[in-house]
Amino acid sequence: MSEIRSLTGLRGVAALWVIAFHLEFVWDPWNAAHVFVNHGYLGVDLFFILSGYIMARTYGGPFTPARYAIFLRKRFARTYPLFITVTLAAVAVGAVSEAREQIICGVAALIPNLLLIQSWGTPFCPIVSPSWSISTEWAAYFLFPLLWLCTTRWTRAAACIAAATVLLLSLLSDETVHQVGCRIGPLNLGAGETFFPLLRCFSEFSLGLIAYRATGVRDASLWVAALIIGLLCFKATDVPVVLLFCVLVAMLGRDRGPVAAVLGWRPIYFLGEVSYSIYMVHYPLIVITRPAVANLPVAYRNNVLDIIVISATLVLATACHYWIERPARRWLSPSRQPAVALAD
Image (cartoon, rainbow, N blue to C red):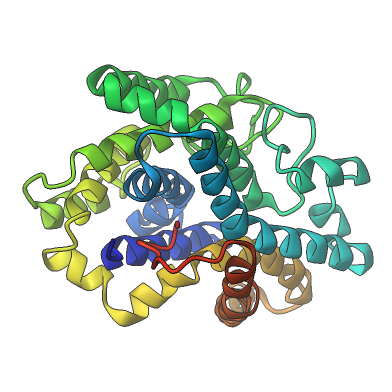
């Protein structure tokens, strides 16, 4: 099965969007670009949808115990080696860093983090903050045969339930989701002591499974992409944007058209290849670098931080991809079959 270059590239775009969000890349709060960047948490929603789509394309079908075991082994090889490396590195750096309190959220959180259950409604926080989504996605992997069955047999009902769940999550109060004062937008749900991040992942992973069944729909990806970008310049547009993500992914599944060509361009495609490493290493770098530039003049501080973090992230992510991700996959899950996309 051939690789879908445009979907790999789309992951790279999502990863850069998440970095820009965490860096608060645009500082003028009245600027439409600021609103766009401030929607960067939706990059995670795009990851969930892409993951569901690629899992359906790669592993969808009747599951036997042996096939399920192979699936989980491949997912472990794909995600865990880099996750545990970055997590333990964050613990080690946090032990001697001025940013200790921001990196280490308590020794008791270490075991749940190593088991990847830190965001399954537990009182423990993720040591590497973005890893909450890796935790919830692992829960989706465990339920993949069930989610596949439901979205295959009852596609319309499953689509309605998944979309309704996304809508209901967006309507919950800050108090309900335990994110008073730190919730940027309706779907910015990451507090692992609740089950809402899990529901966010399950519903959007399921939408990705359903998007796979819509592959082959007439290509209008240029118009869909333009509509998504336009909506992201306005606040509280999370739900329609997430639903349009599904449409865009289904259209790009054919890997044709102008949007697919741009996303498949070698530099963007490369960002997609290293996007998992980008996602995992960028936040610890922000936490470590921010105190180092704190004494610089305000006029230069943010620009210096942006340059250092983005540059260091790209270098470190590339090293992690080639020295950790790829060797670990070859060692833990040898296969002669090419990956269809980065998610595999």
